[in-house]
Amino acid sequence: MEQTNIKTWAECAPRLVAVAAGRAPADRVIQNGQWVNVHTREILPNHDIAIASGRIAFVGPDASHCIGPETDVTQADGRFMIPGLCDAHMHIESGMLTPAEFARAVIPHGTTSMFTDPHEIANVLGLHGVRMMHDEALMQPINIFTQMPSCAPSAPGLETTGYEISPNDVAEAMHWPGIIGLGEMMNFPGVINADPKMLAEIAATQAAGKTVGGHYASPDLGPNFAAYVAGGPADDHEGTCEADAIARVRQGMRSMMRLGSAWYDVETQITAVTEKGLDPRNFILCTDDCHSGTLVNDGHMNRVVRHAISCGCDPVVALQMATLNTATHFGLERELGSITPGRRADIILTSDLTALPIEHVIARGMTVAIDGKGLVDCPHYDWPDAARNTVHLGRHLGASDFIIKAPAGANTVQANVIGVIENQAPTKALTATLPVENGIVEGDLKTDTCQIALVERHRATGGVTNAFVSGFGYVGDMAMASTVAHDSHHMIVVGTSRENMALAANRLGDVGGGVVVFKDGEELALVELPIAGLMSDRPATEVAEKAQAMMNAMQDCGCSLNNAYMQHSLLALVVIPELRISDLGLVDVRSFEKIDLLKGTT
Image 1: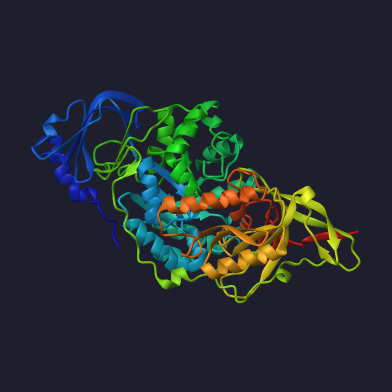
Image 2: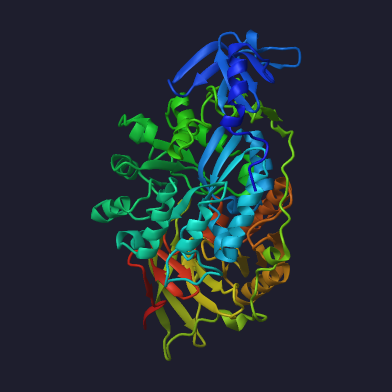
């Protein structure tokens, strides 16, 4: 499947040259705007842009020689003309939407290019699922490039996925038209230890001349970090502080700074540019994970750029980090990321570079949104039944499946507990003294400790792994379950009541996946995600409304964390420290070892 609605430069070159020279008319001319040149970091008033065949033919003070009888003339009226925004690292599945509906949601916010890693669906449906995401991405009126997932499972031996990705899968995908590189290399211990499988995936990507994405989720910036960089990853988005950003760019990586629905890592890292004065060309902005509510209500990359500016970044530098820097990193500087001849005509008109209202969005030379309203169709892939039937519990679950038995004679136990950190992906490895009642270990709401379970849902084994988590603030009898459970995407259930946990888990089994909240035996909210248990092909506004109801239900159960759903969905991500849960047990990600849930008794 080839990318739709855009011709290659070679196909367009004769016409682009003719239009620029005035020998042929442009399809469209934008007049009298302020040209924001991200190559030179200049703002040049009173400039025009001529567009032909979806690409930019001419930029200069006067494009009247490009205007013919059929040319569409658009008045910029002195507004800033900026390149369409690029998201350098993100997962469409985290929006709870398919590529088509995600595109429909972000186009009015000025996003015209996305570099997506569909490793969520790879864990559920393997290479076939990646291909479906890739194919729907190519159908869209904006640029959605796909990174072939690298790590399914993310940590071999510590989790079980629905499918595994092999070096042969990576080598095959490198020939697909929309593949731009290798997705985030989360198995950083594997790279550090020269794991042949990981290095083979990286080698296949580099042999294809494509970019290797990084994911170094460790605070260790010593020899292990150097070994990871030597292993080939070209960027990293897991930094959380200034030292992380500096270390990455000093070693020749691009530092990707993210602002998603729950990850707020721009403010703590952008000081490397704004205060330390490092060259901003090697810094890139991205979202990583944005759910539908954020997209509908707050924005996408426009939100990230505004935030970077509010953190003290020069507006044009912030724009570079969301346009040209991204394009350059992926080898697409001659294709997109700036308003210059030959590039795809992805352009935003805005009246304010700081507030960044997205007033007029042009993608591939066509108007796709005006004043927040999308004006273009986003075609859907025909998702097969195999993609809509992926939750296999194997049996009906009961409250007894969520019992944690105490050692004989114990009155209390010492337990390892996963500690949630607001607005960050890492967790804390905590310990807690928990009561024992009738031989069963109970949570302790006085110390904000409740139960967490991972329910196997790929192979119908009926397996349930139980542990404890702290930080959500839940009260009363409740439970929340989700089949979005990065990265293996089994089912995570968190609750204060085993009966409610069983109700929540069975409900998701019945509807084929999603997110549900129960309180006192009653369902408060449900977000159906029938495609791979991860996505909905319903409109983003509809999904966002249900997602908001879900977050309101979490608040009704006592949780006041910002976007706590995102923290919930990452509690099984066994490649980010410190403590996680998997279908194989409790995992200490500092040592990449399984550990016992109970440490001792009294």
